[in-house]
Amino acid sequence: MWWRVLIIAIAYLLIGAHFLRFNQIELAIFAAILPSLMLIKHVVATRLLQLGLVLGCIFVWGISTVDFVQMRMAMDAPWLRLACIMSGVMAFTLFAAYCCNGLTTRDKGLHLYY
Image 1 (cartoon, one colour):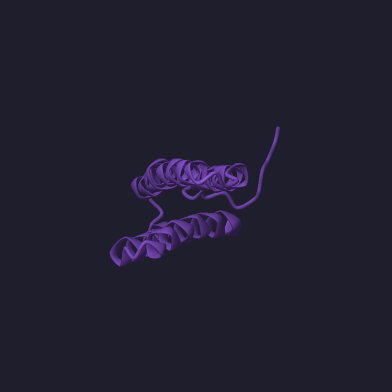
Image 2 (image 1 turned 90 degrees about the vertical axis):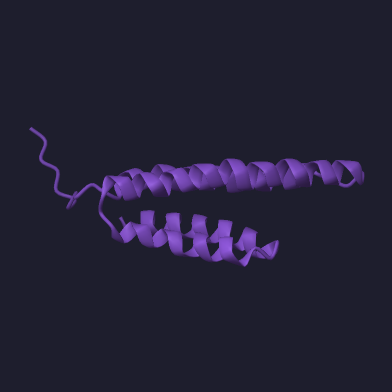
């Protein structure tokens, strides 16, 4: 369970670092504080975390990827490595959104199969 918390926190910190790069301090602080919703063991809090990660993937990483790749292509600079890295970041963010599903389960690791 601790690895889910770590992955989700890293994903939100990456989004916050992206906002910080463009001097959007308020959004960076909001993205850095949002993982504290993991302390609330409720389905609504988990869904808000997932929604934030999916929207961050689309509207932060997706739009930035398109903009950066277009900028590189316009300058005749190599862009394929950038596209691969940004695709990996988007995949990591979506994986973090998927990891939110296990936050509300109260599994103690004991499975009894009959």
